[in-house]
Length: 156
Image 1 (cartoon, rainbow, N blue to C red):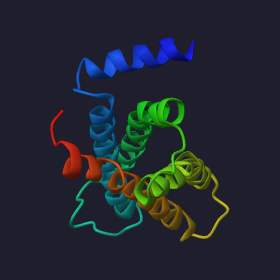
Image 2: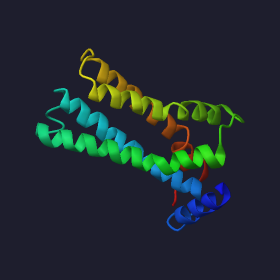
Image 3: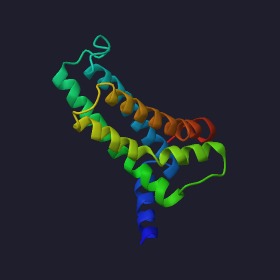
Image 4: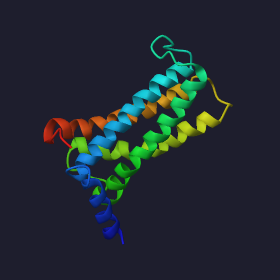
């Protein structure tokens, strides 16, 4: 069953990208761009960088929510590939770091979403958790997409 799902997954991704690894690199880059939008709009929601992000509060909240939803959506094919096709690997330090940090990404997302909906916490908690999520995504991007673009291929 998993073999046919894996084959269908590969067929879908290679209809747009040259390889599944190229698809992962570009999807992760999209998630990274959305993470930058998240940090920027999150800072704006907390009253910072009003001059850099001159969007009114109702609109910035909407942009923040939707960019977060899209970021999670974009990461789902990446997670499928990493979990079911590649698995946890340890053959060099970069891959080991990527595997370890990747194991935490959805847990950190869950913690962030929890604190978004929980109003009974110190005000500094949400920016701290959001920053931790950004750090996780940045680390994953640097240990995968950045490596791919600089060491393998920059194309699709």
